[in-house]
Length: 411
Image 1 (cartoon, rainbow, N blue to C red):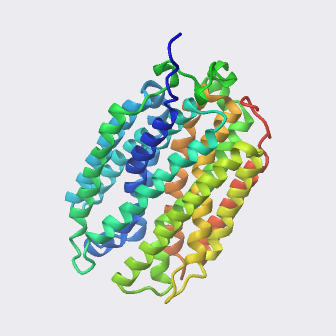
Image 2 (cartoon, one colour):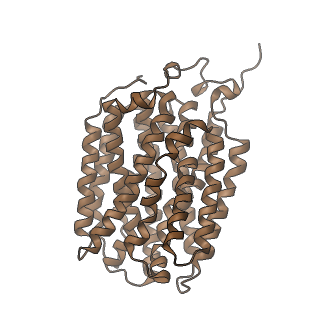
Image 3 (cartoon, rainbow, N blue to C red):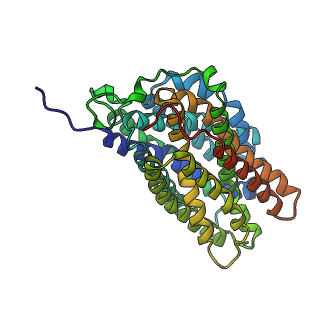
């Protein structure tokens, strides 16, 4: 009898930790660092700066349903990181032409959809069932690590006294995408069956693998799918609004000097990302043990609760309380969506479900910041814009509250 091979799933987790951190953590969470530089260098308004991602989100709605189910996760990561490089290389060379800026956002968003959450969620969900939440939490820590290291990178190599230095920094961010290629090519494996194994290293396939993949039509007729879609849309949109506007909020709250504002933003961002690590591991483990609906509801409620705390930030202090609470909520928020989708509809339907959910969530995380930009231009401060986001975040928590407690993948 041949000797049983060691379970390969933890190698997949390690590989996903790296590629997810590079494809999402580094570019997405550090793009807002450059927004005030765009404003100073090109004279763009806040609403013009934040409009690029929302426009691209609408124009790339087709990418998820059309391309994601046809590509293997490994191939999707390779293509997506290549597109992200092209986008950041373009950002580094662009002038003040907004049309070019928006076109580059289109390229970036395609890269984000193809190499971001979906392929990593699908890979991990196929390799794990009993410890799916814990393993997904570890993978999402890669995003926090990639974002934190990226924050140190962009702040470290961008002199605040040189208004044009950010061009080189953006090119460096783009070149970092190629670090994901050898990991995707030589370490990632799409499914346990590629190596003759089963999820969790079991001796047979878990029950949810045998559940037939549902069609897009089935998902769209299912009320639980719509509740998950609405809930995640509102919560992710609220997080996006905070991430995109945090530096501008600090500016309005009294952090006027560029160097001071850069330092406070970097400290808060790193604190958020470190706190998100705790959120991902703890909430991921809780999702494996407790009723996932209530875990998700509590997380979404916390997202809403952190928004008023942001309005209390003022110099000379660093917003540690806000950063820690927001990081805990943000860390678990993104991660719970694929876990709930797999639980409700089965792992074989995860790619299709997330092919709809992720692009719609991307609209939320990009148009919520745009809504805040427009409201801020009509308001004396951020109070009305952020309390509008707070109300929408509460709608998201309510939608999760109404979800059925059990789905296809029951323990």
